[in-house]
Image (cartoon, rainbow, N blue to C red; front, side, top):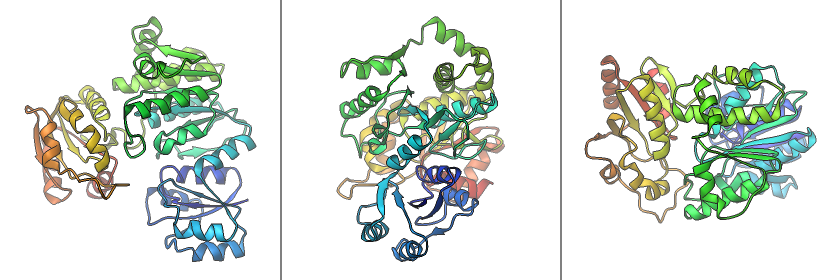
Length: 425
């Protein structure tokens, strides 16, 4: 079976392509340019086309019949390769249909990890612990991880662990046996008009879970009024169980311990391993890439691009070194229109913030771009904020803070991570 992936370097498609390789499928694909994802796939012998004009796809189809074209949600429906594939009679779908095909073919039970924040980390924690405990596991994580490939199909697996993303309502395309909801905040305003619509999507996701959903009580209250559900484990963070297990999880950062607690709950359901062994393996979790990832002594890259995530990352940083400097790149102008008031106190634990221009992605041309000077007006007056740009001046300031033994965290989901690695690795 030959599968062609459009956007093969993307966080949703690259691990799916790797999974197809594990399932002994032939694959090829395209993207707009090189990235960490394309490099990872290319290492596995995959030919990647960077023109995306439809010509390469047609030549390949004549030479080796393409059975299925899978594309990222970011691709426009009039994309030249999608149009060419339809002309040639090739099946064209988004990623969810292809993943569901694999789940059926391999007879795998789905464990889906959803939530506004913490999906990648929680999914990675389960995969890490299962690997440490020598339990066969298949999985797909929408990010690179520090201890292996971002996806895998392992022979003998009973369960498939999936980071289930709410963007584009993708998580509603699956029917999990078990689901974890890390939290329900509000995000992706380009998909969900308001908090109510966002909450309803999580209620719909919860209703699709067959056996068990684990969710924290404050998040469940946001969706409980929308439906009445069965097979729900609503976790009270004041309960004896939460207190007992959380104290045993030896990880830095309260949000990490909360995520690990959910991971422990899932593993107690899916494998016959003692709670103590699960907690012990979970406590050795090495962390995820772009989640307080150490670049060098004192310097970290972090994916936080929402006020709730910023506050959680700074709480974690306070357990490492209380004096944190933040370099922050907001992500998506449409998101800034929705969250700008939430910046009020999320930087409370930072001694200084360098505020970069918003990284633009999937933007509406009609929506006014909010300038940095307007966004920083929402931050508490006692936080020192300086508007900055990615460049030599910022690099010199970071070096100066590191020489002062400060912790510097570069936060954002856009170009800041690539700039950081180019300049400091």
